[in-house]
Structures are given as structure tokens and as C-alpha cells.
Image 1 (cartoon, rainbow, N blue to C red):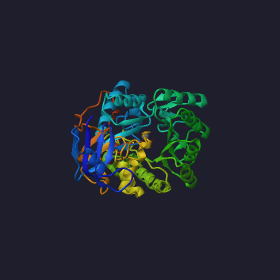
Image 2 (image 1 turned 180 degrees about the horizontal axis):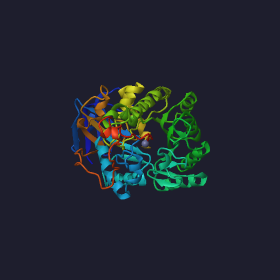
Image 3 (image 1 turned 90 degrees about the vertical axis):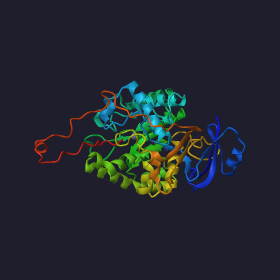
Image 4 (image 1 turned 120 degrees about the vertical axis):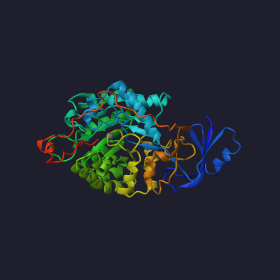
Length: 454
Ligand SMILES: [Zn+2]
């Protein structure tokens, strides 16, 4: 492989430091020098490829810490659980992985996948069979029979969609070990979920602290970290006590929960993008105004506690929940950063640090990716625009001049438009047709919005 000099760009290095105007030298798969050392190292090299980045931004590839690469943008759990097929899901996921990479996302964590195809896709990408970002993959998310993110669609035992029900210590230990044998980089636990008609408002904790500890101990014994979908203060306290490595959502923290997080410094990944998209743009897709308001409030209510955790030194990671109809691939991976700037009050540089240097943890590659620093893997973007002035330029694919993954130039030619295989989507007749609607005496009701948050 030849060497590449990216010359004289505005370098945002991912560490939170102010941008510098300098060159970056890449040799093979790694960044080998920056600044004057890069220019000196490039001098006289015959095999050098040169990218003139004058007036452009050079930064680490974005890492999306929460991307469901196997889902293919369903608009309901019914579609995801009952309308997908194993082989086809893997083929479609490969195309979506390419789309994600072409949006400047050079790494994703896919914590749970249908048919556990995240693991196969990761291996296919690493073997050079299909293009795609680096993937840290989980297998099936673990549920108890209380359920979680899909109410009564979750069976009493066995596998459904992206998850598996485990009951009792024997099944917990056996399933964690099975997933690790099959190549899981992370174990994912749905710690909380909505239970229909349960008297508790919000999500219910469906595990005991001892069960959570058993998941973590079993995984840790084998060197594998655990990530939890967690809403609610008590659940957060139990996850910290159990030794969980990464907490998703972390909404509804109270003072004791915040104290626990600050003491343990457990990384948080709120994943506001799904809620933000419905709150801000839901009208365009006919979403129920009440649900939009609920999601807007969830962000507003959580923002202050998340910010306090960040200020106290808790690592803040970033993920987009891409893979649903609300969050299609390639469009919204930057969006969490916009929410961090707008609702948490982070500077654009701080937000970028969350999606680069800090998010390397989600990839299990801390100190290896996410920084423009000599010695790191050369996952690099060259962008026509300045994200420190406007963070949303990171979502504009027309401004992406180059994406390098491990030093190799990514082909940014878009794939031709695709269709959907037969039986792949849930179809509806339309909104409910009462006689008032038929007679023009009432407006058609809003399309149903899924009340189960991912
Ligand atoms: Zn999710």
C-alpha cells in the first residue's frame, strides 16, 4: 500500500483540542506523523499519494456507537420480528453497511441483531468480502420473560427478532457463554422495558441485581464487556452495582443514580436521535403529536443529568439508533452531535470528541481509532465545511471529499436505488376509515407511532 499525505487541512484531531492547520501522513493502515513531521516524512517519497486539503476539514471517521445494521429500517417491531428472512437479511445488511461507511462512519457498535448476523457481517467486512465500517458486534439481546422493548411480542422463552429470553442462572450463564463462543464482542441486556398495563409509569426493570451481576461476571470472566438498555434511576444503580460496562439511554436519573454513575465512571450513551427525529420532524410523517411531545420531554428531562455526569468526568459516548424507518442508514449518524450541542450545551469540538475518541470504547478499540494522532489506525474524513461552526455539515454527504478506512480510500459512488424484496415490509390499508372520515366530516387520524422506544 502506498503512503498518503493529506496536506494543509484544518485538522480536528478528535481529542477535543482546537483545530490546527497541518498535514497528516498515512503509511499503510496507520497515521504515522502529523504537522511538520508529516511534511518532512513525505518529502522525497516516490510512492506518495497527495490529497490537497487546503480549506477543508480533516478529522477522524465518525463512530456510531448504536447502529442496528441488520434491521433494514422497519416501522414496527411486527415488521422486524415477522417479516425478515435470515439469508436475505444478511445480504441487505451488507448493502446498508456500505451506505453507512459512505456517510463517513468508519466504525459502528451493533449491540444486537436479527439472526445474529452482525457477527457474520463483521467477519465478512474484516475478510474484505464486502465493504463496510469496523463493527463491534453483539449477538441476541438478553431479555427475561417479563419482556422489554416489545411488550407481549416477546415470547415466554426462546428467540424473537434481535433478542432471546433467558430464565434463571443456568440459562443466563449458558447463553452468555454461547454468544461469546460464536464471536460476540459485547453482551447486550435489555434491563428495562415497557410492560403493558404495568402500574409503573415508564419502563420496568425486568432483572434482579443478582441476575445482572451474573451476566456481567460470566462475560467478564471471558473478557467480554456488557452493554445495557437502561431507563430509570433504580435500574441504573443496579447496573452500576452489577459492574456493567456501558449504559444506553440512562434517562430518568435521580441524584443517587447520578452519584453512582459519577463514582463508577461508567460510560453513558443516551441515544437521543430517535426521539429527536420524531419530536422535530414527526409532523412530516404523520406522527402522533402526543408521542412527539413525550419524546421531546424525554430529551429535555434527561439533558441536565447527562450534562452533570459529563461535567463530573463520566465518558459520554454517542449513538444514533440508525436502522429504523425514523432513522434510516446514512442520514442521521451525525444527528446525536447536533442534539449534544443544542440540548446538552456541548461545543461542537466536545461533541465530535464523543463520536470519535470517546466512542473508540464502543468499538473496543480505545487508543487505536478515533484520533488523528501518529500511531492510530487511519480512519479519516476530508470534508468541505467546518463542523466547529455548523455541526450539521457532518450529515451532508455531498461535502464528503474523502473517506479513508485503515488508510484505504473508500469508493463514495452511491449504490443504485433499491427496492424491497416481496413480503419484506408490513403493509397497511391506510388510516382507520370511520364513517366520519369517509364523509369528510373528520380528518384521518394520525398514523400509529410505535410507543415502544428502541
Ligand atoms: Zn437500539
